[in-house]
Length: 318
Image 1 (cartoon, rainbow, N blue to C red):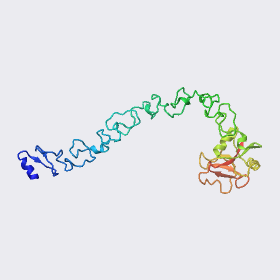
Image 2 (cartoon, rainbow, N blue to C red):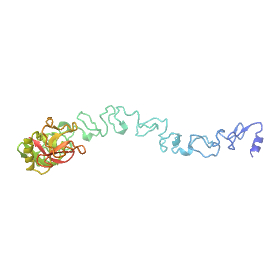
Image 3 (cartoon, rainbow, N blue to C red):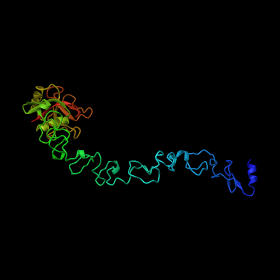
Image 4 (tube, one colour):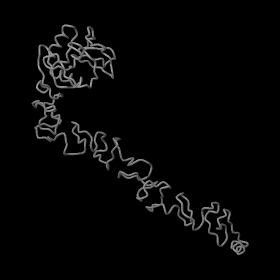
């Protein structure tokens, strides 16, 4: 067959350089669109390679599902959507229209990570976008008019900018009455700063509180009472404190002693370094970052180091 074809084209050379049985050149039957590639000829299987394998005049046509002229192997990042392909113009729609790996580039004018089409109601102010924290600045920061700083959502007569620390709770506002409910009712920055909330008992110069708390929380409670965790810097004070604690609880209690600032440099909360000490046998052993001290553990007046997150009753100086 090939011989007949060559004979028919004698004087008008037919070329089959790649040996695929199809001819190029000036022969009247020339139909190989790339005679340098044996996988390119009429009827060849089209591959996803950016090449017109079947000489149809189009490349990768079975792999261009959205018919936008780009296949996935040719760089189409979404072959289901003809509006997304390399070289297209980016629009503000939350989609990578030009397939460059970025979404809505050029539409975030204030650099807050949100474009106008993605919830930024003021693309000139980086403090304003959908979901931002509302601030007392005369601006709708969270792009939600229902949470405006001028609103009183809980109906307690105060706005967030007027002293209300929780505009979703009518029980919390500036000047409110503190109760034992786990909330800052009077908006003074302290929660449940009442003796009753901790079950505390005043014994001599100390307030002993049998409710369990971490060392930082215990100290915050003592400070809310107007004092601090108890300092027992001498033997007599330590013994008296131990007796006071025993009247309220038989458990260990936090005292105002810590080496959190520098390991091994135990210091009282009033800033005075440890002088006379009453550590129990083998203490402090710093077993697992134990940076806070408690008393009445191994015996009356003895101290032990604990992890500061441990929950213990506590003793306050008044």
